[in-house]
Length: 493
Image 1: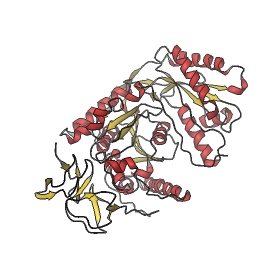
Image 2 (image 1 turned 30 degrees about the horizontal axis):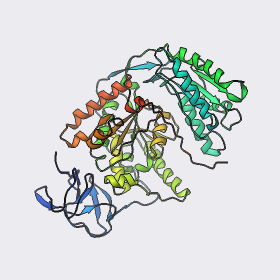
Image 3 (image 1 turned 135 degrees about the vertical axis):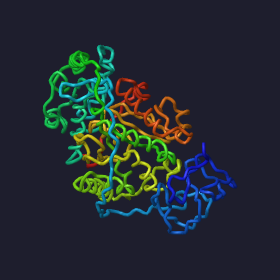
Image 4 (image 1 turned 30 degrees about the vertical axis):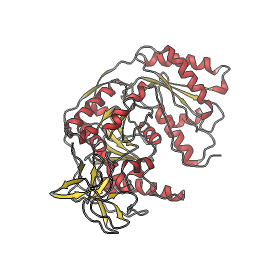
């Protein structure tokens, strides 16, 4: 294992792969550089003098400006680097060739639904229309799990605090996300549980759900029955019986939709886990499958790389709107657009939003952008899609599921136990967290700085995802974790 990595030949910093002690010497392109101070693993060290105001270069791109003169061997971080980003920008479409190698379609064992959609789980979901019935939903799921049979995996309640006292787009988003989850193919059966007096009551929600299979989707209004627990038990029995008749069967990977998200990133994320997911994305798209990249605020500073990979100018304009609308959201709420990275990111070695974004967007691989989705919009175009959602882990992962992702790949350098409505594969950026948190981490990308071969490791990840799609449980599922969070944007009455 090397002591450092210089990601691009134009970089004026290296990334320490282990802690560099003061006085320690490294050889960079034939030139010796001596560490002037401690440089933690995952952090940056200057390999030549950088003048005040000069661009700090990493990944071959500017990640900020030097706030003061930085000498060769110095630690480069938040104390001496500042963002170079501004507010709303004007962009020019400069298309680049973006394509992936077409390969033979693989198969996984999935559940084919009557409408042609495919699930990788056969669960019963209880979707509350309003937070007032959360505890009832949870109690119903606990009781119903004692009766699970056939091919049904589990009965899961998805509590949330919304569905009432909301206005405008905020309420619209809640209804859209709930309807998306009702229609998700990982659920073999769904019980929509309402209170009766809420704004997003079952009658309203049905308008968003549209046509539905009465065998698969049941509705219960708690205020309209004498004993909601008994009535819910009856409906869940019917759903378990219906869903239990489905069997896994061979399905092509062209039916696989995988969401991509990162959280708790560190200085290794843009070197190991995120590029690995990018290679996975290219492999899946090469077989005709679909990937979705989200967390728009973590595209800021690297957005032109995505814009110029748009398949046509219409998608380019949609991506410009995706970026600038999210910036305007920050401005409308009187918040600093570039108040990112998080404390954990900084501790892990990420200094500016550009630093974070250039690592984050590597999850998109090299494919052309073929779809741009608004929050809550379901994916309809195979290939690489961009989705409007914030960087918050639970909100973004839920948004990916709502858009149709059957699985989410989640890269992390710090570790996290959270789940989402669909299997959420945790991919560590470093081997230390993978060894420490074996109950959280599903796949270790840290081996990529330990001389593992990138293409071979990407194939291993692809094979692992096929196993998950075919029923293998990820760590959060083994722990019984299932999370859901909706993007709260408006006034609460």
